Length: 564
Image (cartoon, rainbow, N blue to C red; front, side, top):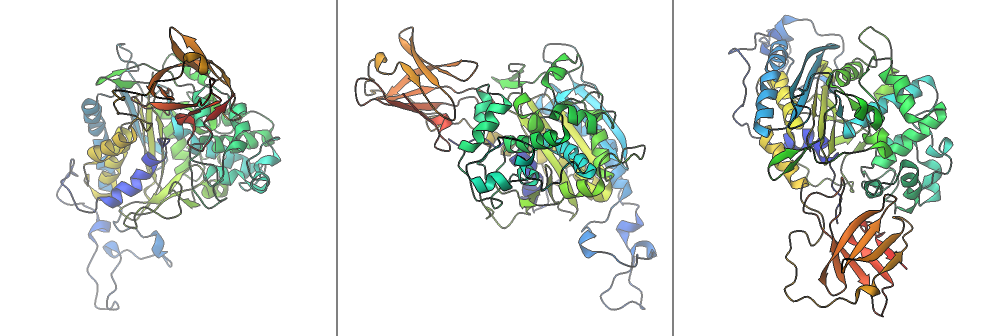
């Protein structure tokens, strides 16, 4: 059973999808005017005095003494395109919300250190009149990671820790499966997803209701990939790194985030505590599609992985933070909030964001990289882009995109399960700013990519049960308590003539349905179980009493077997 990679693919699509669409398509928006009106874009003819093959600087301007060729984009900057993009983002957001029927959305644009556009769209919760505004608080999901990275960069600048400080230095009892890795894995390793932990390690334990301490304690049970060689996205790897830094600072992570970033930047609507999100009267409920209609069906409580996915914030606050990042750690008033060198390290590519392999699936696409909590790559214009997406299958889709060369960025927050809408809007905006028109049908491209990630989990998903299944053993053969060092105990009890499986500290219950012989099925729930998911539960019942059962949903890394 493959775990979904909500927060990986969306963040990388800005690079990979754009590269895949090499043929020009019809624009969904065009820049106003027939010409750029920019001497920089127009250029000028080469004079006879110049060497053959050389080009004169734009508008005859004198070039600086040294220009790093790697810093020259393929498409020159045009201030009229940027201004047009800012004017048009409202219309793009309006049509996007109307087309997708996402209940609520908030959008902000930052340029030259200022918030130049911010607006809310739709409602905070379906069926209620309360409108989304620019101070409405959304759950950010994995957009929490780059925000948390700036908390750590602040501490690095103070000298509390270094990016290469080992986790065990300030997180007593932390361990992974390999003693060498345990002693040497650093904050940087965790924030680049190169610790060796498998993809999304620990997430299924969180879905069962286990707290942060329990999940971190079980990372030692996870099989490891080669250390510092393989990228595997891990929320609880990030969380371990953050916890270690908080320990070095002598406080908890939630307080440290407030102290280092939220407070100094005046982010009064931002918190790393779920209770604060719920208590805010202007917060957006999460929504999922049910039979084609959005419903506020679930509540996502992410405190266990707060450094990786637990921040809640308004679009105004996130835009304020993004302006600081683009301004090399300085707030709008000039205060140096984050050390520029420590922040620069976070914005540096450290590993190719290719899950589970050092070899890309194709050599045709531009490479996407991961810094410390940030996606970093190059776009079609040749400029560096930074960004990150956030996604809760239970009701949140967020993204930010920054173009440092233009001192330009966009933040898009939605209160619906991810369908690629936030990413599509950010790409449309970036196209307008860099090329003067939208280059591709990003809405269809992203919708298609995200639809594939919504596929149900489980080898039996979508299959029809056997017409003449082999009989099961009597219920009494399966009833009892089974132990698992990773997931914890499981209880199978008889209920109403059937079987009921109970798991986790909250005693979550899953009815078992007979499939064939010793194979039953259960319907898993939580962030990692899309609608339609189904998991096999296979009993080892060669005698009168089953000695073990294997739950497919928890067996991704071979840890799904429970024994009497």
